[in-house]
Image (cartoon, rainbow, N blue to C red; front, side, top):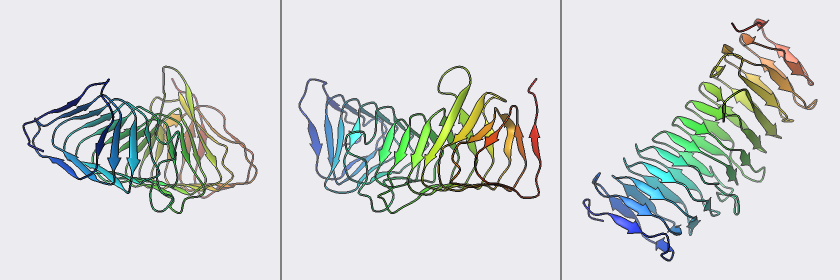
Length: 274
């Protein structure tokens, strides 16, 4: 694909199917695809911006979106294929991923992120999500228990008042920040049957405004400090899973725990935010 060209698809046009690898190296080479699009087991690399406005379908094998160009995906994305997000360009998904057909094959990571900051909206994945890049989750996320790979977030994660449900384990390898999906207080909920492991620190965006709730039946371990920027509070509703704190915890309000709690040589402080 010549680096100086632009590919434009009108919203009223028929579906465009890409069956072979696509490479556009120049920043002037942009893709504005306003109709339905199908990616059939390929590598799509763009040096310019890529805009996908309507339904996107993955088929016939793993699909990789890469290059230094930014990707904006406003339409839905479905298909029982693994998705790789690579390259230096940012990638923003505001449409639901996997709502009709869960994304991924169930073998390996359903979504593998290896480059560029990524924002995901609603996600339904057939296996875990792997990310080496900064990741923002703005919609409810479901990881099915039928997959074979845990979710592993090696870089920072921000969750904006969402519900994250996983039938597999979840590892947060770096700092996690809770945000609000809209103005005012919000609660992010982590559920499912999988265990949750926090290796980095966990903070609110605004002191006392964001809280974290657990409905999961798996064990939860906090290896880093909770609430350097104070959470509104913590809650655990399941009696099946235990919760362990290995570093200090600071909240602005009360916390409730229905299951077993282990405090490992740390301080638990409840205070007010001025």
